[in-house]
Image (cartoon, rainbow, N blue to C red; front, top):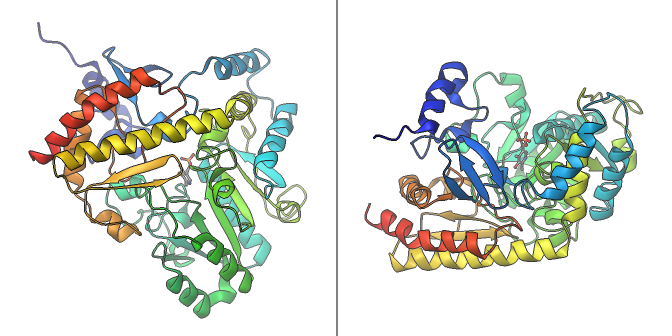
Length: 431
Ligand SMILES: *Cc1c(COP(=O)(O)O)cnc(C)c1O
């Protein structure tokens, strides 16, 4: 009897009622081909698809699942909160606790505003920077992804990169004109832009350590130099830690790197523990420009949602040094294993990391910016991806995304990944 592929059945139904069959573009497997897994459930390091097949998950919900899927204490916290009501449209004690927990880990976030998505966090940060400076222009870096608000879509990473798009239709010329895009890690270019129009620039926004064009760590001193350049011209520095925050360490990338202070930091992903919650934080006097204290308007019916704050609080509470140590160690082991498997088959590659985040570029030579990231063999990644999937390992379905581990990735799960790597390397080499 021929087995019916339930993922395929669902994908066909989905495409009839949802554009591309997905609620976010990269999920559609567009760049790797084939049928996306429709996830039925997930626990620890594993996801189970609609066919009932189990995969070791190296997507981890694109970051949030730092503790693994359905961590019992996080689930219990959400269940408890749900029993007390789903949403109030009023402040709660849990929001205060979560803001305090964030400030304890990232002291520059003296005050915190909660929103529901990373997109909202960066969009609000940009509005706040414009409100604070009375200026319009935002400087961003090619290949950095900051969510899908109009001002930040130009030359963006993540799904925009995966689909090979320059930006997005539907963004007005005016919105695009207020965004200046600079090559990543190119301080001379940043200096030039500021020399030309420094008095019009409200802020420079950067991923703390870019991981949406693959992982491209900042050159030593790059972020600190951005701080310095922005300050000299009266502009703000927005450090986007939506991906790195509370993932690469207790204080995010800022906690690892230190030595400079951004004006605004944005959080998402891990801070919500898998629920829709994100935040922006900064100096109190700056944050108080937000309504209701100040003139910069920002609001949200579901902002600070009690289930999401419960998940975030439980996650931060559990994410101790042991968790970060374990994820760091797993990451180093996996990077070494991937490198060895690809070397054995003489597959051109470079593995780049930022803390526990890493990605594999199928090309020779270091990748310092988006142009270099694009000059990789995406078809090689596709072959690698599908060979891993065949062996029960789910990688992010794009050559432009980081691989994610969790503290739940135990020896058993990792053995399965290690067993799959030689086969996947061979699949790339044999073309
Ligand atoms: C994921 C991401 C965002 C957008 O967050 P959403 O919750 O998907 O809107 C913004 N910035 C960075 C660096 C991200 O990785």
